[in-house]
Image (tube, rainbow, N blue to C red; front, side, top):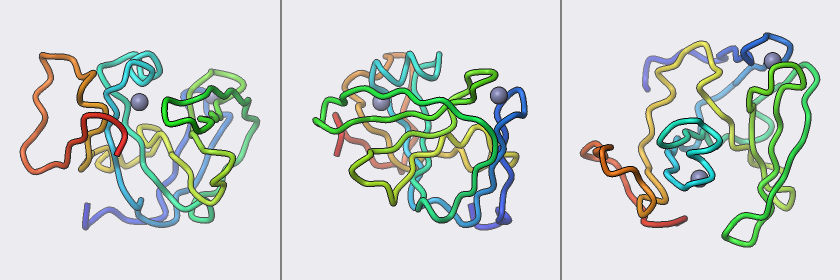
Length: 138
Ligand SMILES: [Zn+2]
Ligand SMILES: [Zn+2]
């Protein structure tokens, strides 16, 4: 991801929510848990962990939250218009944001170097060489 230029613009599918990512993510992870399969409507979801002060959001978002298996609250923000998921966060750790980076204009960023909840992974998906894997949440 060396030649990705920051800031990168992001937008939901309808364009009501836009944002700007000012700095490279701390980590990009794929999660294979069943909740993320539902969320992504795919075999796994991709999350970019970023510092809350390196992203600026604009536009109306709605909230939803659930209790996660780790005992934390997983809170979600999504576009009020099109429902596109924008980011997740733990209300007890507001300085970190789990951005859903497929909304960014430079999609080279959606290249996970860590795969979690591999125990719930779909059998047909082969984890690439050279990435870290965890059976559950590390
Ligand atoms: Zn939208
Ligand atoms: Zn997950």
